[in-house]
Image (cartoon, rainbow, N blue to C red):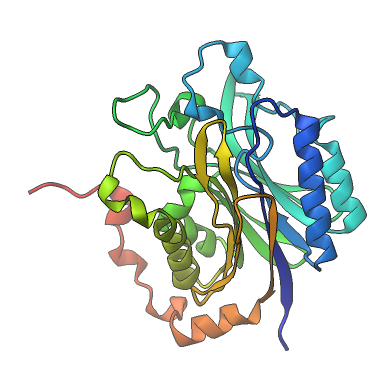
Amino acid sequence: MSRYLTLAACQTGPIPRSATRAETVGRLVHLLERAAAAGATLAVFPEMALTTFFPRWALTDQREIDAFYETKMPSTDTQPLFDAARRLKIGFALGYAELCEEQGRVRHFNTMDLVGADGSLLGRYRKMHIPGSETEEAGVTTHLERRYFEPGNLGFPVFNFGGVRVGMAICSDRRWPETYRMLYLNGAQVVLVGYNTPLLLEEAPSIAHLRMFHNHLPMQAGAYQNTVWVAAAAKAGLEDGQALIGGSCIISPAGELAALATSLGDEVVIHRADLELITACQRVNFDFARYRRPSEYGLIVERAGAISK
C-alpha cells in the first residue's frame, strides 16, 4: 500500500529591502495557510526568505549588514510563522541568514531550519557550497555571497518528519551531485531546497537562454539518480533591481517535474508525493546496495577538480 506526503513549494515574489520582518512573515504565513488548505503537510520556503538577497551589494557598515541576519529562531518577528504551523498542523523549512557565536567567535551562515507540524525545531542545515566572490569583479554578476557567509559546518543531516526522512539544501547546493548523494546515503527520502537565483548571466551570454533549464536540470538529475522527492522553492521576480528566476517545482524520484510554478509572484506549488515510488525507482534503475562500488570512487573525495595534463 502506498504512503503519501503532500508537499508544498511556497514561492515568494520579491522581498524589497524596505520590507519589515513582520510584513514578510505575514506573507509567509499566508502562503502556509494556502498550502495547508490544499492538503499539504510539509512546505518549503526560499533561501533567505525573510529579507532581500543582500549579497548583491558590497556593503561595508557592519551594523547595516548584521541587520539582515537572525540571531534567534524563532524570534519575536518570526514566531507567528511557528504558531501558524502549530495551528495548521503543517511543517515547513525556512531559509534565512544566521548570525551566531560558536567556538568563541561570531559566525555567519546561510541556513535552513526544518520545523515540525507542532511548531518545534526538528533540524538545521547550513549551506555547504558558497558561490560568488568576496569582492566585486568586473563583468561579473554581482554575487558576493562569500563576503557574507562561510561554508556550513553541519554536514548533510537528515531528519525524521512524521516517519519520513527529510534533508535540506540551499541554492548552489542543488547544482552539486554530491549534495543529493550525501543526503541519500544519510537516508533521505525527501529533499527540500530553497534558492535565490538571478535570471541574467552576464558571465556567459552564449548560454543565458538556458538559465531555467540549468535551474531544473541538476535537481531532476539529483532526484532521479538518488531516488528522492525534491521540493524546491524560489524567490522570484524583480527584487531591488535584480531579476530572480523563479521556477519553483516538485520533482519525483523518476526525475519528472511533477508540479511547476506558473508565475513570478507569491505562489504555492502542491503535489501529493507517493513515497512508494522511491522503492519502485530503486528496483528499476538503482539497486544501490548491489551495484554501487564505493571502493572505486576515491577520487571524488580526494580531488576537488580535474588535474591538467
